[in-house]
Image (cartoon, rainbow, N blue to C red; front, side):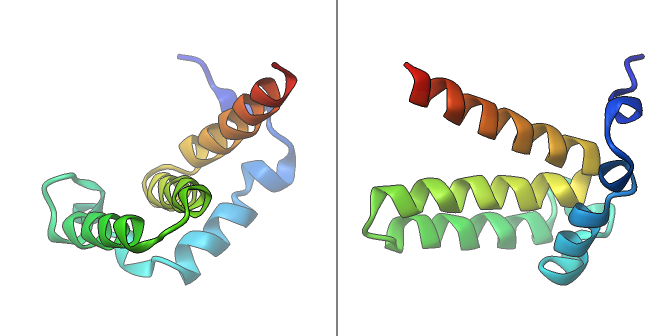
Length: 99
């Protein structure tokens, strides 16, 4: 199995950034039940993001909301996936700007 963590810098590997986000913003998503799509915690998270998405009048703000919600969800589930989604988001943005 490919171990991506071995290529990451020490501060990323030790999850300094993602631990801060998940411990302060979404502490209730830390339980194993919350990481299931069939849990009440996920339903509350999804409904909150869904309502905020449709309440926001600006298209750009909606995109930022979805990026932030994805990062928070993945950071609660798996720290390496949160880093992966962050890296691919930045890479996709830079590629799109270059087109």
